[in-house]
Image (cartoon, rainbow, N blue to C red; front, top):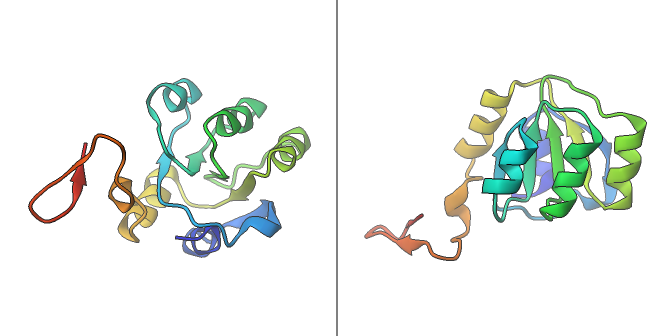
Length: 130
């Protein structure tokens, strides 16, 4: 799924990263706790969050994420926008709540089964499960 498609599905406003909308992403996660993102998230390209501080962008950069979607119309500060630009991270804001936004992306095929992760084994239907 492209970042442009995510923008469309979530009715999201693009804040920065105009040149990166054609990038393909395979996974996403939703969290307001950056410590959980650091501890448990692997191979996630998109972060959905309601947390608005520079730590969100720093965490996304450390985890090689390429897009942050702020839920509930949250808006990043100018400092966050500058930091995201420095690290080529797309920032968007959606009016949707976290649960709905994650559900939409999941139902459209953006989930952990989109790309097998190391250690996953396929079941009889060919789907991977950790």
